[in-house]
Image (cartoon, rainbow, N blue to C red; front, side):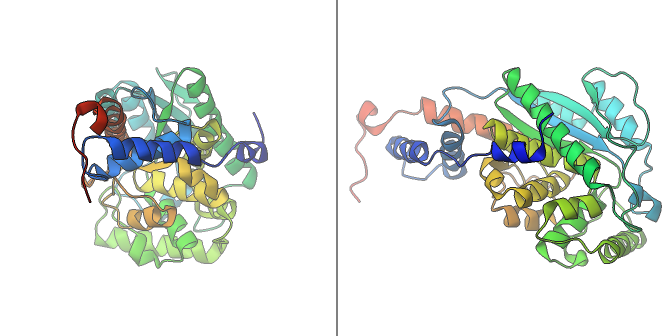
Length: 352
């Protein structure tokens, strides 16, 4: 496996000339300029990534990272930690929300155990690449070591590289890890300099008392660890999660491979924030899928400069929003390739 430095060195700027050509093509399609909004923006971004607007919909995969969290000791979730491996088994059996929506989008689902607190059995589609049996309790000290964080990042990038070798040309991020909205809120509070109250949400549905426990745990973690907001690795190591690190690696790995990555919701957003802090260039390869119900998600998207395509009131995670976002990207590709131009259709352009 390559080093983190070598991975980051592979990330290049988008192709500006290809984006200009794509814009000229989009402006020549039989519609008022810019009237298909986000679809046109996506087509132009795809041109910058691939050197041209793809001629057909891209082969897709959702990469779902799973890990557990030591901060569960603080009572931050309405669900027990045992749900993490139970849900991963559900993914493997095809019965979860992401399975349904990945099938709808025509995307493969790749599940990776990067930090589940128990040993997982052999399951179809599950890659067992455990870095540790969950993180440590971030309210008492760093969630993981620097070596663990780097290892998880490189695993995420390696999973992307393997998928690209099989023909995948766009990936989406998904996750599973009971308690993981707590480190996600800590990450955006730390990097964005926001108050914990502004960015924390109810996650899996905690009540008012549990919400206050969650707020207190995040504040304690930030106070104990004092993460450096300008250093993405420092924030990740001190208040992150192994599946968040793995997804940061997916974001960096996609950029290194020269393919787009569709960012799901709150936890995926935290991973994208880490990746975008470590390597700002990687943000150009990110596509925002939806705006989560978790209040901190809008702060993450703003930090990254991403606009969500969909407003679906989602808060499930798993990659469900990314899967739906991929169908919008299919629409952008088809629109770009199937619409007539003014000249070919004999339609007069605007005289303005």
